[in-house]
Length: 320
Image 1 (tube, one colour):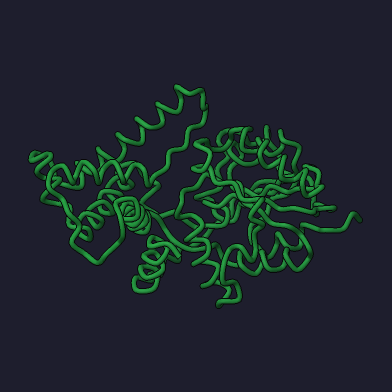
Image 2 (cartoon, rainbow, N blue to C red):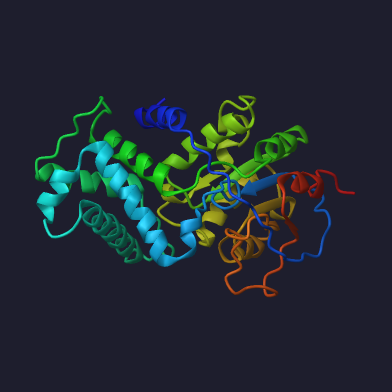
């Protein structure tokens, strides 16, 4: 286990919080009751498997305030404040960190766009590595427990910020649904906009929700069917990611039409999956994360579902 994964597991253990919130379904019709002859299911993560939404995200001002608080928590935990104030004495440390963080993301995205990547995805640990380097030029030295070299420390900082910035946990019933699909001899994969900590969190959440029946995501998902955007510097809805998935499906002797893409976003998930020839299932169990993006009636998923138990009943391995 990496230092960042150990750090994440310990933080997850000692700072477990109740992030439950009331879920409300979104109404969206679909033409089918059941999708049959399914060999593979591919899942989006955020907003589909992960309940990441906070109530503060509904308004631009409250969202920024919540994120500034998360930056402040990160600053306090890692002892950054004097060095950020040395960089900018006119503004609170969390505002300076906000500017550095978002400025570096924009810079890295622009560099990728110059390489003709239409939907750029940065590696967030590289952003924190750059911030850490700036802090060290102002005398910063982390004085807490040993978290390895600068690259590992940057991953721990990235994880800590994400831990506080977003809601945490799986939607109800996800673990049982994934286990049910495995028991039906379906192969499971992931194609998602993600970062290095996505797989760490997914393992931790699956352990919790399954009461340790699932120890590692590798027990559920096929390694060759996992595609995280940060590993390819490109994000959905890029068809390049779906083409990589095509090659893997070919190796498994599975047709795109025998594959179901499960997502929460018509533009980023359902539309590109349909264009790639896959069947689609839209999760509408949380109206805060079911994104229609102005495509209602223009993009129609094969099925919609509002609970994960419902999904297991509406996807069949059998042809009839």
